[in-house]
Image 1: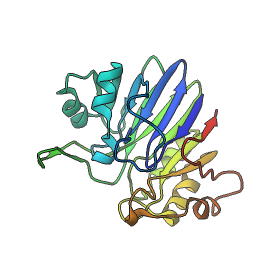
Image 2: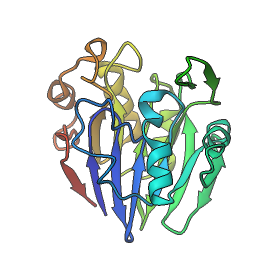
Image 3: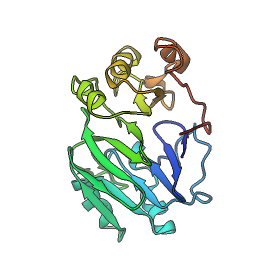
Image 4: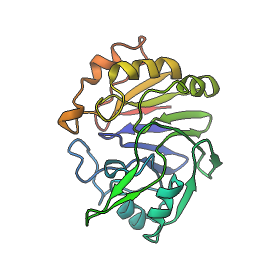
Length: 226
């Protein structure tokens, strides 16, 4: 399995001959190395409805006939664009042909601002546990620190955790250190930083606070092989 980071909260997973994108915010993401025109994707998983996470989901899904997995209200909203969706809710899990997806809680907001300025409520924000071939990836989405991360760490053997460190809109580096320790992930990758001035952070300073070998400050386009 190949897991790569592409700026902001964009994560790509290649496994079992499928490409899975989590929160594909590409256009407008000054840090990404990806192009919507060139990207081939089979599955898109969304953590919540904010524009910088839904990103280019509709265009990508239509171009690739991709399945979109999202929290219920967000899946209904995306589905109105004639896209194949699979709605889920926090605490629920489902076995897909590529692996198992379970949604966890996240403490944040979730809404989508349309081009005309209207704001659509898109349900509860979530984190994602993606398990493929006995390897588990945890993408926390946008969230504050919460104590149930301890339970997530106790009940799941997490190989890689993607945690927001930007502060202001999500937890900052110090809280993310606590999250990493509670989750007991083998590797931790910082996300959701430096795409805006208000979330500017040093990813290496964050990973240096973690046990040796745990923190992995992936540069854009770099990958982990599981």
